[in-house]
Length: 182
Image 1 (cartoon, rainbow, N blue to C red):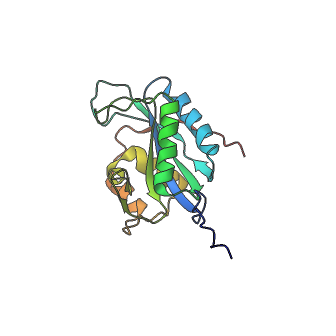
Image 2: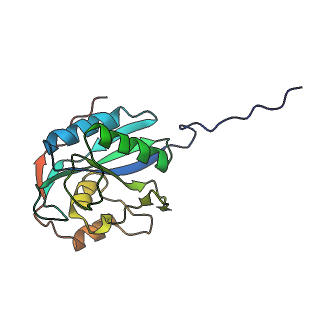
Image 3: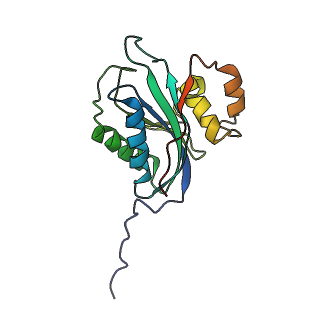
């Protein structure tokens, strides 16, 4: 009799989880960077891109001597773990020319952040979810409200409550949502 075979847990072994991703860019044709990122997200294995918000223009958070940003939020269903998804997002960033520097909030070709991963709260060395700054960032909240206006964060905070507290701060819609090839 042979011992039972050990089964490795595959990347797609977890239940599907709806997550929200923040997309941002302000270098090398940021509108096109976000459109390319949407194509890359739609092609991720073990993931299904559900929807993408309009593309918004926003002022930079950090140093003001950099170009304005283009931002959006995407809804994605995945069977990857949050850490596995983060690895895939960082791979997309690198493929689109992202250079990781010590400078926080500096210019970049592409920034992909996990804002929410289901109703989970995650605090690991690599990842904090909900995203640590999402409650005060207009360029996250307003695009997110396009996709999920009735959303409640894992701590019970209503998205509508956050929107009432965070000003537009010059946020403008630049383009309609990118078309999703299905």
